[in-house]
Image (tube, rainbow, N blue to C red):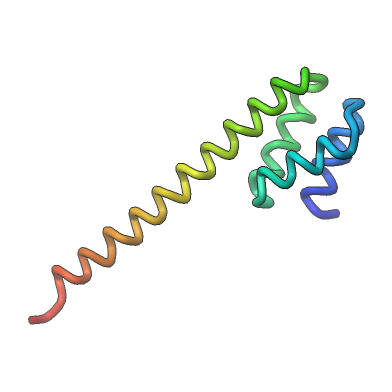
Length: 87
């Protein structure tokens, strides 16, 4: 079963429409983020939709910060290589 299918199943189990799960999966985009959201839903039980959306936004924000950090680390490594090259 795909992570997005598991997320949708968790949303439906909580009594929300399948479309809500599709929107969450579409916004989360990565399997890891979707798994984190599914774990949150299964652990916390029923939550108002606003709280679920807030958690989704928090997970997206953490993912985006991680991506930016990795880009920065990559750029810093290239700069270091440039400065340390043989001349």
